[in-house]
Amino acid sequence: MFPNSSNLGRPPFLPKHQQHNNFFNELPLNIPPTLLSQQIVDARFNFQNAALSRALLSGNLSTIPAVSPQPLTYGNGSSGPASAAPTLFRGRKRLSEQNVPYDVKRQRFHSPHYLTGCVPPLRDAPFPDPIETTLPVAKDKLSQQVLELFQACQQQTCDLNKKELCRTELQKEIQRIFPQSRLFLVGSSLNGFGTRSSDGDLCLVVKEEPVNQKTEARHILSLVQKLFCTKLSNYIERPQLIRAKVPIVKFRDKVSCVEFDLNVNNVVGIRNTFLLRTYAYIENRVRPLVLVVKKWASFHDINDASRGTLSSYSLVLMVLHYLQTLPEPILPSLQKNYPESFNPTMQLHLVHQAPRTVPPYLSKNGSTLGDLLVGFFKYYATEFDWSHQMISIREARAIPRPDGIEWRNKFICVEEPFDGTNTARAVHEKQKFDIIKDEFLKSWQRLRDKRDLNCILPVRATIQKR
Image 1 (cartoon, helix red, strand yellow):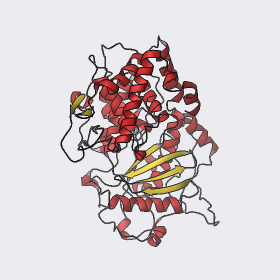
Image 2 (cartoon, rainbow, N blue to C red; image 1 turned 45 degrees about the horizontal axis):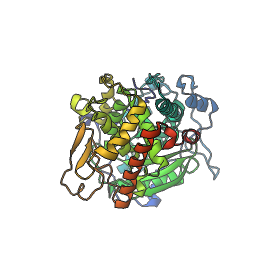
Image 3 (cartoon, one colour; image 1 turned 120 degrees about the vertical axis):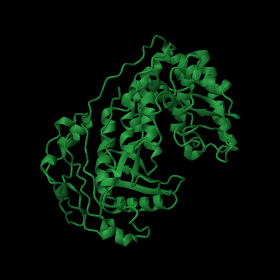
Image 4 (cartoon, rainbow, N blue to C red; image 1 turned 60 degrees about the horizontal axis):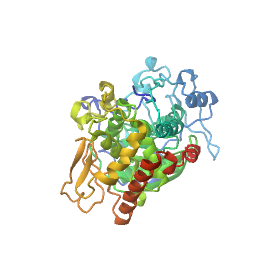
């Protein structure tokens, strides 16, 4: 039911009674850059193994050969220290893990005493083979165009493998600074709504407790940025620390040629990744519809939160909400129907298991993809009350706007299903809001009259760009 699923749900922490110390609370927040550079051990990235690359990019990880760790040579001619742990993974099992004592498996490095800590052994699940999912039947031209666009532009297994390889190797290096941390791939790369051109989103979890995003998170990200700029500069380019409400480090992985955003402890992103992943696969019309809407919004320049328009996450929630509110719903509220599977207090190492307990949703609504796309634009162009209503997939309906400060004087209100914040808060200018509404209205009218996707989105050009 969930194709392209990786081993990202591995337990991020030992149970509290097994933890020997709390490394984060012992970490001073004023480490100077010079001290940091002494703490970071030379990187062990090694993407030159051709057999490994071919296996990863083909999606067949079972053919990855055993690799012996080799010291790397950097620009100054010096070699990085060899480690007892393997530099590269072998696909389904770490090198001789069952026969290596725990003390040897544990990652070690020379550092001041306040950075020492126990790294839980990684319990890597087998990387599952892709699963073929049934696509809806397209009997009319518009539905066929939607399906054609989806099949050409959806994220492939090889795209996910590139991102997963980067995540795996970055986690090894970041654990040299934060030994108990875990790096999660989140967002569209894993939630089922990714495209071939989707960026990668990473969440670095350093502790189970919340992290102050203005102080602690920025400091941690500054250390990560320093790591990228110094020891990993051969593989990571353009690392930038963006001091937003949730600060991130933006960077490009030279090996996969993927752009990444890395945040710290924004764990709601892990939870909503698997909630959206469940919505993506319980009904086979959901993913094609979402992909077309995302491509449409990008083409019309209303899919960029940094420029005051809609984020891709908000657009996905808007599509899901529309499908929930049809007279004969195509989607339910998963949080209402399966509260135990999507409990916002569930431990992170269990979150990835929740979708496995949810069966496909059998809707009585037989609308075609084309009809649903026309109806989506009509709903937001003529039916939804932007001034008084909030989009909520948690409630599976439009609900009255809250009176809190975050919702006051906001043009678009889309409820984040776990923490209740406004995912569309970036739309704070009336001019941008009017542009968004106008695009919905014009697209509905054109699509209603012509029933041709090209009248609102050039299909051929979009497929070529992917």
